[in-house]
Length: 173
Image (cartoon, rainbow, N blue to C red):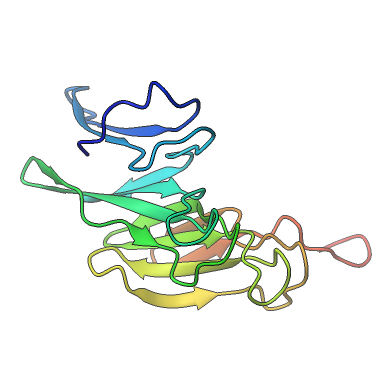
């Protein structure tokens, strides 16, 4: 993007796209709303012509509700489509805590989403071309502090979504 470097802001964040064959820098994406401790780009993923950049502390909707930035490469050019905001913004949802891209879709974690339970978490499957939510996911046994969506991965026909705060009875899985 055309945002100036964030040298005046500590830990504001940037993300870089490199060509693996030539090692050339293809694109730089800087935090569009630089501020201290934003950690823009804390997680990134790419697949095919799409890259997603986590901006989980984005506060443009509500305080730290989060967003992701998308880069799309077409014929050597890099496009910066509009960012995708948290589809159900709430304070400190951290939408974009983790992101996984598969083709034109992204699986995005919102680890502290409070819609169902306090910090129960949520994940969204999003069409990167339209920004539309295809499906949202919550843990089938959601409880407080599950932090569902902490780590997300999509491969072929499967989605994996972690909930590291999930409490379990007994000693075993």
